[in-house]
Image 1 (cartoon, rainbow, N blue to C red):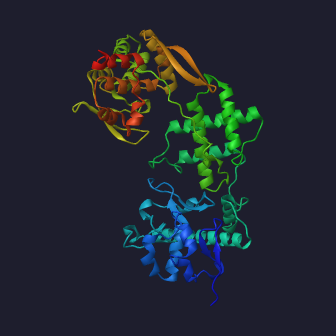
Image 2 (tube, helix red, strand yellow):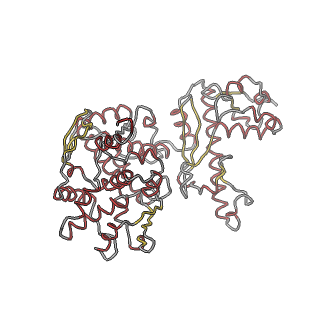
Image 3 (cartoon, one colour):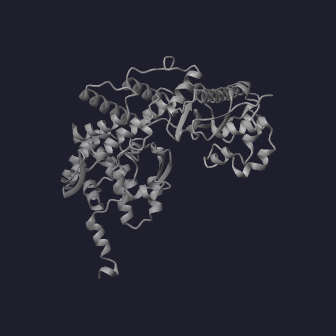
Amino acid sequence: MKKPEIIYNINDLTCLTSASDADVIPQELFRTNHPDCDKTRQLQGTTLEKSTQKPFNRMTMRQKQDLYTRRMIRFSLKNPAQPLTSIRMRMTINHVRMSYALAPTFKIEPKHWDSTEGRAIVDSKRNADLKGNPRLRVRLDNINTEIDKITNAVLAVLARFQQQGIRASADQVRNELQRELGQEASKARTFRDVFEYIDFYINACREGTILNSTGTRLTPGTIRSYLSTKSALRRYAEARHIRLTLESLTLDFYNDFVKYLNEATHSRGRYRPNVIGKFVKNIRTFLRYAFDNNYTLNSDFKRREFKVFQETVETIYLNEDELQLLYDLELPPSQAEVRDAFLVGCYTGLRFSDIGRLQPHHIRFDEGIIVITTQKTNRTIAVPICPKLRSIFARYNNCPPPTQSNQATNRMLKQLCRKAGITSKVYLTEVLGGERQMRCYEKCDLVTTHTARRSFATNAFKNDIPAALIMSATGHTTEANFRRYIRCTAEEKAVALKQYKFFN
C-alpha cells in the first residue's frame, strides 16, 4: 500500500497525515529519534514526551494516531465548576491559541466528562448514571460524535491549507473550520449591532443560560453593571457618530473608547480609572462569550494591550467614636432605619446586599451569632452579635432593620453623618480624566454603604483581632484582598509606630 503523504500544520512542527489515508501512518513519524518529533517535544500538549516512549512503541497504529490527535487538538470544559457547562476545542496555530465552542445543545455535566481523554464517559462502569438511563447514553454518544466530527474537520482543513501551500493564521483556520462544519457566517446567528448582542447576553444571564464561575445566577448588581456599560458604549457611539458591532470592538476601538471616557463627564463628574476598568472588563466578558460561541471572529480582546485599568482607591472608614455619634442620633423612623442598617454593616462586616437579605432565622440569639450565605461569593459566614447589634435588633422586635435602595441609602447617609458632626477634612489623591490631583472633602460626603464593611475590618484590626479571624467574618479568601479594607490614617499609623522602642 502506498504510504500516505506526511504533511505539517501551519507551525511546520506538528506532523499530521493526509485525510485521504487516515488509517495508515508512516512508522517513522512515531520513532522518538524522528527529527520532527524532536522539534515538537518542546511544545507542551502537542508532542510525544520521552516518558511515554516505551508504552507508545507498543501501541497499534490506530492507537498512535488517536493519541497524537488528542495531544494536538484538545477538548475541555469551559466552566468545570458549573452544574452544566459547554465544551470547547483548543489548539495552537502559529503561537496563537484558537478555540472553538461546541453548540449549546452539547452542554454536559462535569461528572460525565473524562478530562484526560477529552470525551464524554459512555462506559457504565465509570459512569453510574448511565444505568437505566438510555436518554443520557444517547446524549453522551451524540457529544462524542460531535467531537469526532470537529476533529476530522480540523484535520481536513489543515490538510487543505498544506496542499495549497498556505501558512494560515488562527482566524483563517477558524473561518475554514466553520465552513467545513456548515456554519458559515450567513448561517450563524448575527446581531445588528453590539447593543442588540448585549441585550441578548443580558437576557441569557437573567434566564440562567449564562452563570457565574460558582455555577449560580449572576446578581442584580452584575446585571446593572452590564447595563451601565451598554449605556457608556451608546454615549460613545453617539459622540463619535459611529455604528458599533462585535467586529468593530478592536484594539483601535479600545484606545479611542478609553480616551473618550477620560475626556467625558457624567452626572457626578469625571470617570475614575476603576469605573473605566469596569467598563473594559465587561466588554471583554461580552466579547469572550461571543468569540467562544462563534458569534464573532474578533479576538482583539485577548491582546495584552486590551487591559483593564485598576487603581487602589483612597477610601475612609468610621472609627468607634464616630460610630457612637451616629448611634446616639435621635431620628425619625425612616432615617433611623437607614442609620441602623448601616450600623449593622459596621458591626458585622456584611455587604449591603446581604444586610438586605437578612431574615430572623439568620440571627441566632441563643448562640450569639449571625449565620448567612453571602450573595456575591456564595460562602457561608458566621459573625458574633455584639451588644450594640443586639440593641439595634431589639428596636425591630429582634429582627433586622428594613433597607432602602443602595442609592437612596447613600444619599441619606451623607446627611446623617453631617448631622452627627462627622465633618473632619479628608485629603485624597485621585485620578480624574487621566490626571492625578489632590482634593479636599468633608468626611460625611465620602460615606457610602460600603464604608460600613471597611469600618468593621479596620476597627477589628485596630483592636488586635487576628487577620485570619476577621477574614472568616468578612469572607475574604486572601490576605491581600483583606488588607485593602484596612483604612487606618497616616496619623493613626504614626501613633502606633511611636509605641516601639526605636522611636523612644
